[in-house]
Length: 313
Image (cartoon, rainbow, N blue to C red; front, side, top):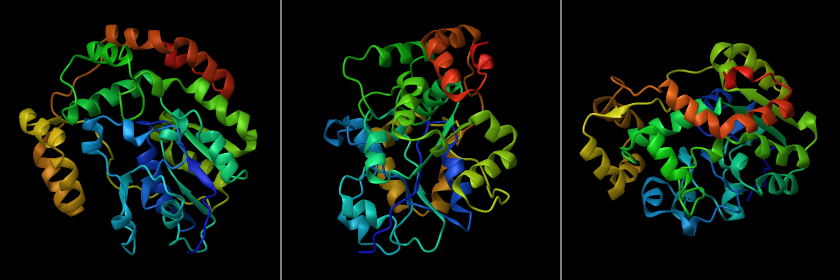
């Protein structure tokens, strides 16, 4: 087997634009992105055996059959646990300068920073952060979209936060995934400052070209204009909530995703979901969420040297 080690990692945060960013990077001729966008290999503290039945039914767990394909089919997320499978994700890499993957669990994981450093101490770490209040709300919208909850925002977040057993694949982690300060600290302890680039979701939205240029310079590739067509992971509501819930909890949604061509899936999705009457956060709900994050936002501002007062307003 050809052994190629990735030299950069986009580590999150979840619901902050990593999918769009991975598409832009994948379209750059000097960048190679793993065919499984999120292999989550270095999150060794995430125990697949503890995943909830619900999470298992919506998650692609790549096995030997997947790795027999040549070339490997593109998938969004999996949890690779065997080293030879992980290396197989990079066998198709050629002479690209930047070779990487984009696992959002690496920011949340307690051990991923250390594991990545042990694997490749020269690795570059790319982070994109989003206002944690908006991140949590986007996460909630995703749960609504796939029929994972029908509770109002504050009830759903409180229920999840107070859940006795929590973790990736066990609970939603609306709050925990937005605690960037302590998460970033782990990377600053393992890597030198010049190896870590922290970006912000609002910059990617408002000034995409300059933000992508900054990423290219960090990865030491030509600063090309980003190529991005369409939107990714947009919020939507199911037109048929009862059917949506059945598809999710029966595992049929996962089977359809694995076996129906992408173009057909997009047509079905357009017919099945609507962006009309999407819920919006009230001021009370914003204040409720902000109460969890105020202290950590100040810590994140200190670590990154970025004024984040607008996150607190």
